[in-house]
Amino acid sequence: MIATQPNAPETRGRILDAAADLLAGGKVASMAEIARTAGVSRQTVYLHFGDRRHLFGDLISHFIRRSGFSQPVTLPAAQPARDTFDQFFRHFVHVVWHVGPALRPLWAAMAADDEIIESVKLGDALVTAAFHRLFARLEEEGCLAPIWTATEAAEAAWSMSLYWLTVGHMRAMRGWSEEEIVSIQLKMLRATFLRAL
Image 1 (spheres, rainbow, N blue to C red):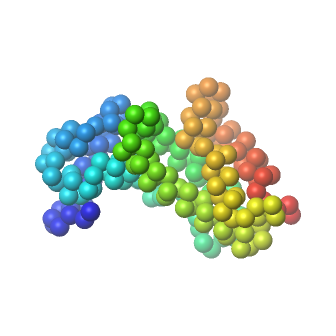
Image 2: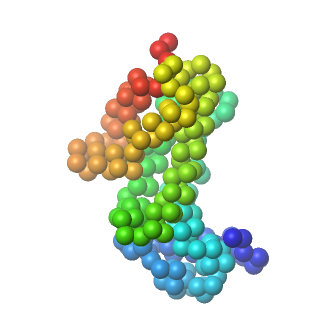
């Protein structure tokens, strides 16, 4: 929902910053707590976001922007899809490396909170759309391994990657660096999805 106030973008940003700060402290806050922290009324929060589900969905994108990224994945249209493939996954691991830890309280809250599940689905839709764009281009350019359709490959790559889990696990349990995770993932993804040259 779009606010009609002249300072709407500033107010919206302040609300998202408040929600992000509370989440960084390990708390998936209520709308009232977020409003209080942002210094606005609860009605203002609802005016800008409609409901808690949309607020936390937007918060996922907000975390990515706050970490220095404008989108979960960039996909330069000028480059051939095969050349974009490595860049796409390298960039995605980089985003997750920096954003994933901040979103951990949301993942933990999903088991007991249907609104949070719906919020994560909103964020997931942004990322899976980028996967679908990449694999559609690979298919159009004849670069996709012949056993896959673009839709199947996009969904399989996303399910194989599970980056929010994989990156955190390999980082914490194996002590892998970002570059080590990228290297292993790219070998697996190239072998699975790209047509041999």
